[in-house]
Length: 409
Image (cartoon, rainbow, N blue to C red; front, side, top):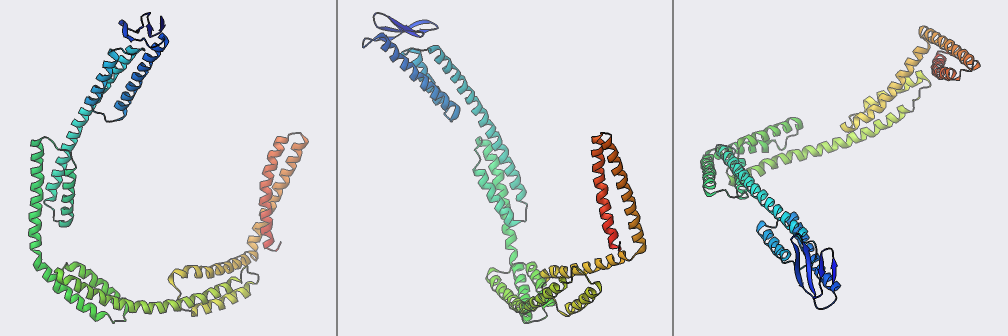
């Protein structure tokens, strides 16, 4: 006789499996050893384990229906109950019980989800009806018409409700669309007279536009064309058979004028381009005066350069700030040189600079003595702190001495 924790084989070749309800006959084995018999039925158990695992995964990760899931569970339960395998069949039964609970829970979730979707669909359709009824009163014919068509597409994409609710909402929705369509037809039926008025108005605009096409009063005529364009837009559309021809004549007249203006402006731009080259050369000549070494000569030279600058005409607008900025920079440098010269010859400023230098020199000397005393007393920490302070004072003194030199010592 052979056995393992979950089963055994007796002397007659009968295979048993141990369950919570006691031993159950698995089958009979005459083809080999008891060990081979147990191994065979243990493999059948492992096969059940794999099948249950696969079903658990399908229930958990796919949209397997509750009906199909329960059919599969019952099929597996039948195999477990028939106990033609050796292993922990009670554990498999518990897994199947748990899987039944999961399927039931999923069924309830789907039921609740469907109810929620139905409720959401009802609210969505009610919102579409309300919007359609508002659009039915709109006079934005194109936008409202396009929006109503979009609402129809949205409606088609929503789930159906119960017949009564769906029919009632659709009746309101359809009635709103019909009301809008009737109003739009009535509106466009009244446009014929307006389009005839628009045709007459646009013919007058075309006549004026054509009369202005050869004008050389560039500014005033361009402004008038802008006004004519505004009048054209305000006139509304003429009948389709006239609209395109009138527009082509109107636009053609403008094109003639603006092409001529562009040609003239191109010549002006070329001239301004040459002016820019001349001014750039003058700016380079002025920049050679910096740094200023001879203030009087630099001032005279810059005056002469500036006179030649003023004699040159306009340059392109986008290039003006850069080239003028170069001249202004030179002018500022000369002004700064003049201010420096004034400060150098100003006795009051020189006296203030000398006084400040003296105060800083006294402070530096005093700090140096304090440092020496601290070193002699072995107080290096204090000496280091005073040394850092000395560095700052010395820097200020150096700066003040440099400033004093500008006054001639």
